[in-house]
Image (cartoon, rainbow, N blue to C red; front, side):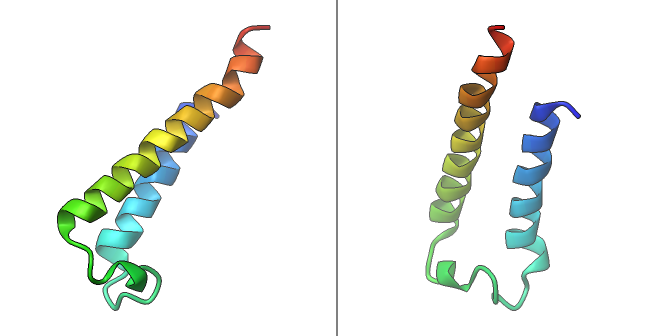
Length: 64
């Protein structure tokens, strides 16, 4: 499977879990007092870090 698709699936799963499935705030309760802006900044940083890790790891395989 294409690694970009894997990253997209993982990122979407985390976002959907936080904003849709976790209605009683058991898994993401530590973010209870955060504003929506703070949550979006957190998840944006999560996506950026995921992409950077993907690029860093795959650079070894693409350069060969």
